[in-house]
Length: 202
Image (cartoon, rainbow, N blue to C red; front, side, top):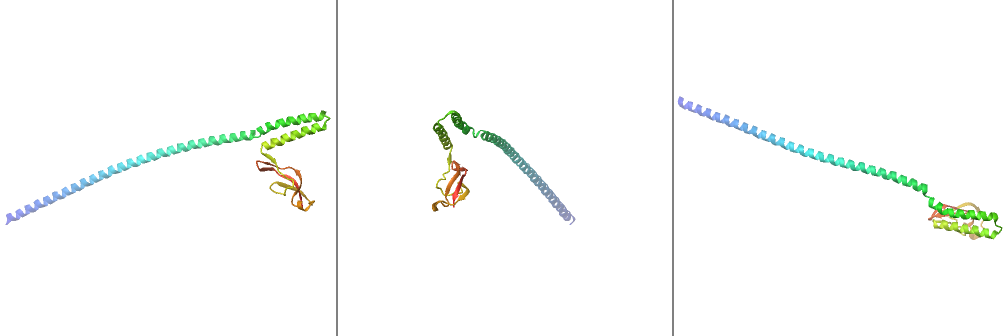
């Protein structure tokens, strides 16, 4: 009976030892699995960090390129603005140059007519000379887009005329019409540059 009990105890101890060994193996396997998992997570995190760093570097480079382009564009625009202002200033200074150059021959004609008036006794010749200069001047104005505003027998128009006074109309059909022009008006390329000063019938 004792022998049997001893055998049972030995068996139990063997089983217990096997169970403990098995449990230890399981714990070791779990530790190895956790270590592997930790290593895998560490590797994944390292890869992710490397990827993020690469993306950050690429974005930083793109930002630098965009900033560089913006700086160049701003510099180009500033140069363009300065150049445009300079050209505009020069244009304003010399805008009337071509017109003045073309007026000078008319001034020469006036000077010749003035000298002729001092010595000439032929009034008709002086009159013809002045008329010639006047026609040249009107032709010059037309060539430069300047036209006189018509007032004769025209209805009064506030877009073209300035009424300086009104008079009783000599006839019924002249009411609201221009009866006299004190100063001619002019347009430059269809834009009024001076209104006609007129007397209107009422």
